[in-house]
Length: 503
Image (cartoon, rainbow, N blue to C red; front, side):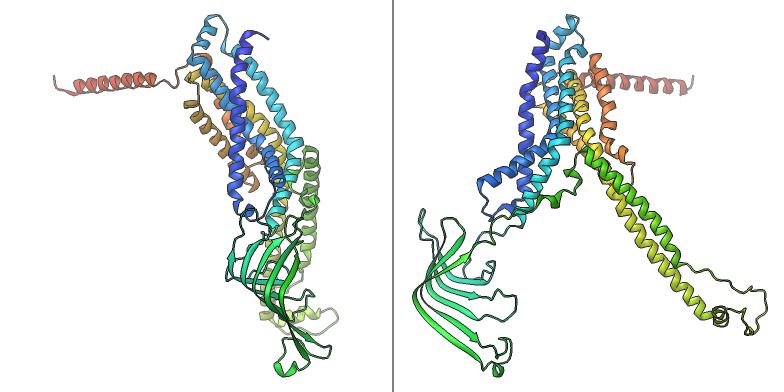
């Protein structure tokens, strides 16, 4: 490796890893802001939260790589141009393309890594990340009693406290509760009303050491229970019908109520339930599923065409030119034809009803086939994205290296602004192409490759300008051009004015 290659590569890796880390951090913050309502009050441990962030950090790498390559290559050649190192290289007979060669090789390797990552790691990270996120979203919130409000998230219980006093920091006795009302509901699934209620002057609430049980230690209260014998009717019956019910009251000074917290916390869902999504598939699986969906679409179309024939009836009708007369009975006369010939209004209504049935059948099947075709497009689109995200890295390198050589500015000022503009342009074109492809407005390969098709010529144009030392972004060039244009316009108007004046 020559010194020029070491110089270029040494200037590239620092901004690359820094930009990659910053972009991943920004995308993770976006995730936290989007799902913040799902995370609060769920009592997530550090290990679970760390695994969630790890999976989604992996998912952001294919999106972050094009921006990292764009900004780092732009800063690298911007710094070389700002400190006249590019000028020195060109004076020594080294062309710009030769100076870009080491980064060009690096960009090709990063593109290959991105393709491998999209095909092997991203499906696994998508499956793990989104299944864990689903389990967190469906988990119940931690127990949070509020003063004067019944809390009913504990299965089989409704709890209300009048006053709640937080326990001191490090205390193991739990929060102090005053004025407790606890309703016990039967868990049999049969609605029999509230047959047991506990009233206590005060109490304390805490969890067991393994956080599997919630303990209420109650003081100075009563436990009211209603028992009904087998011959009595349900609690919902009238008072005259509840003569078999018995009431019992138990007073206590110290009573401990233990409730299982099995319904709280995260319950892991079978990950196989999420494998149907196209983001969880690699290229081989996507190809197989796409072929299966396409064949299913074709077979469904043929079946609909064949079954639709039952909605049509083919019958002979009398010629309108034949004078109207009573049809004589005979073996050769179809009784149905005779009925329709003598009853025109019924025939018209039957035709209208049949036409409406056919229209409804056709509309529903069009929608059904459209949804099946959209599924095929989604899997095709994801197949193309395995390649488009890798090629986007090479396109961003062309734009970044060329722009850096043209503007000759390094650092995190103007290069960052230019990189963000091009990245947003790439992102918008990608989103628009995906939307049009999924809706059937664009051919799927065209929608998937739309961003690269638009930006690749831009990169080639900027490369051509950079090789010829173009002053594309120097304001002096445009000022001089404007002055030349203004002088020509003045000269043109003076010439016309002199030509139109009388001799």
